[in-house]
Length: 429
Image (cartoon, rainbow, N blue to C red; front, side, top):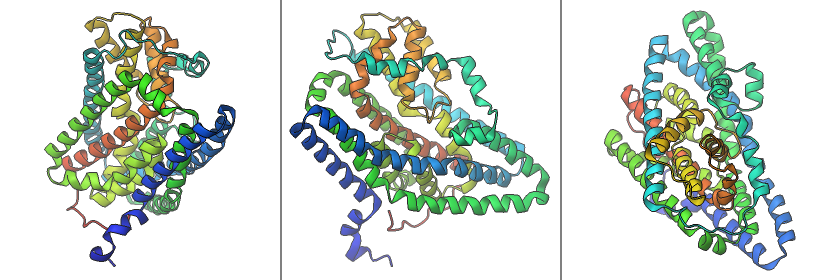
């Protein structure tokens, strides 16, 4: 069954990872051809239609996120057994999340100040109409609204809108209550565990659509964006951002090797497919079910994975964090606004709070950046400066979010002594 000697080379392209890479290349080629050889109006119409493929894939994933988070988290807490265990693991998780968030924000602040991509910038074709879609949502981002947003009014409403943080809160209470009742509620927890296995089986079916979704997303973007023009016009901003995000990857991987030693290499191999899906679709949420499956295959106990990942998707978005300080200060530089270090540190602390629990919000990073700019008297219309290149930045920060959450879950699992002995790698994707 595992005939590595005769099938290793071609099996890569038969597997999910190879199919997604091929889909990305084909999507980019098709998009560039459409952009160069048909009228802008027709290209825009094509982009709108082809992106339906990506929308369908993401909606397929979204339909299983709520039941997956609820069932796995409740079962995970019930297996942990008591409030003390939940508190211990939760404390380790939050300590990791806030440390990682602070480092990511600080890294963005460092590189935007050193490289100064916004100083002396003159960007043409600023689309203020597109910016209004983002700036119109900024009134919803505040510390008070964040606190109110944590607690669900209704679990059914939270599930209907895929509010992961609210589902996590309800699931924690439900799981603790189930654990306190012991054997009496075992039939319920057993039923939820079986349900979670059914949902995970659905994940395998849904992931078969990933290459189609990635193809649609990439083709749609390249059809309406002149990549060469973008690369030249935004070289300084995008190049500086890539230096920053690459440095964050180096730090995360080094920290991974520090805690996981040689097993970090196995973890990276395991999460290649989720990383590429997140990169292609610009949605870290789209790989939540697949990432759950891969981390369990890596050897992290299901009760740790089911507890850590939902929390991570609300509190541990390392790529988005790095981008938020970078983009906010970039806009200030573009408008010639000088922010002293004290103001920038205050901005960093504000972002630490207002950015939590925004997973699933469309263009969440931009909404938080716009709100932060408004708090510090930076023109929020400056969001229009980065909108044309934001999709490409989002590809990198989405993949970074996935790496950060995979690492956090694996390390906390090891701290708890719950990582099983490394499982032998299978040849599936």
